[in-house]
Image (cartoon, rainbow, N blue to C red; front, side):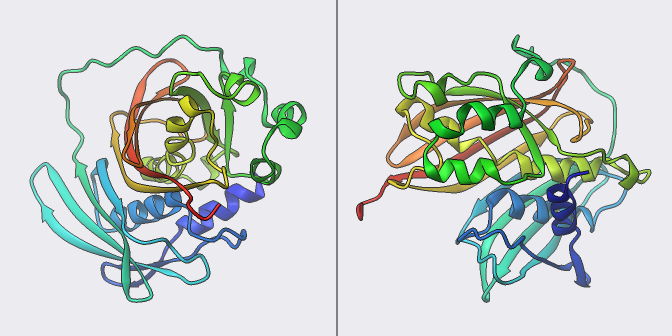
Length: 292
């Protein structure tokens, strides 16, 4: 297991302060604000800690203020409803006495029902895509300085883009991308009889990595563009079926609209054998900086 994944797992292991009250910390990696996926993942951990016998099927969150990585984040869970089939929780993340993130999360007891799903697109298998080390070797000198610093560091989630054309020839491409992803280590040694929440929380973290970036593809821009101000405004996930976060998942993303300094993106997440396990949506701020 990579050191970066070990760090992420410790970040997701919240400290219990009191009933319905938890404390999380941020990795000290030099970022000016807390990564949105971290807050989503930690908030889902807090909600899961208050539910037994049911698993999350959806969450909807709003980013209210930038998170400060230098101080802990307090997560307060409100047990809105414990029904016969569904359980609902609201989680507020707090720093400096103010909410920075709000999330509603619903849990469902396991039951049978009608089943269908969208088909996974045909793409190269992860073993046929360049590894991260190969990407670094072939792309590093072609990337903007900000992106080079990001790619050089060790990360808890391994990413393998299916198509590299946007990096080699920016501009003029459809606002869509597919990326293989998985946790950078085997999680079996950490599992208990109720292992699905761990994988859901890791996927919640990973789902924020490339989603808003999809809206930039049509414009030949990148997420670390110093002339852009980018921030996630909201994020939603629907968990459809069971999966493992340490096995390859295909994240198929597109952006139907970008307008008024907001980009809207959506994603479908498939296992390697084509099972649709989750869907995501996100709207984010995409603003040209006026101070450049």
